[in-house]
Image 1 (cartoon, rainbow, N blue to C red):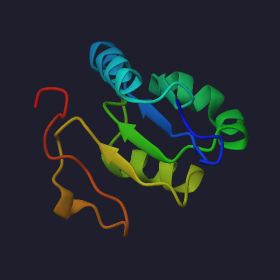
Image 2 (image 1 turned 135 degrees about the vertical axis):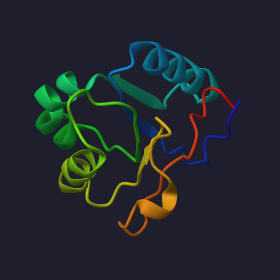
Image 3 (image 1 turned 180 degrees about the vertical axis):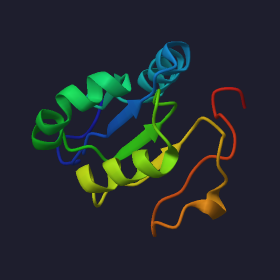
Length: 117
């Protein structure tokens, strides 16, 4: 049991991926690894776009994991996320780009899918 004097800051992770299998597996693995007060939001790209303004206002997202967005290029995704979450790092998890190609400071990408590692 935690001491009442310890400040616990919840983690808020957003996963946006149109690959529903990867989305569900990653969400479940993160939820299993996190504490009960941490939150993992897992959405498809269309669902994120529909709810993005509400999510931005009410969820203090600390990191975004980005999978495939049907019909989007990585540069378009990067721009949309940078505008929505200017101070939040995001990581591409679909393995289609390398970290060196990401010019945004403080942002990076996984070179491979962490689920298959």
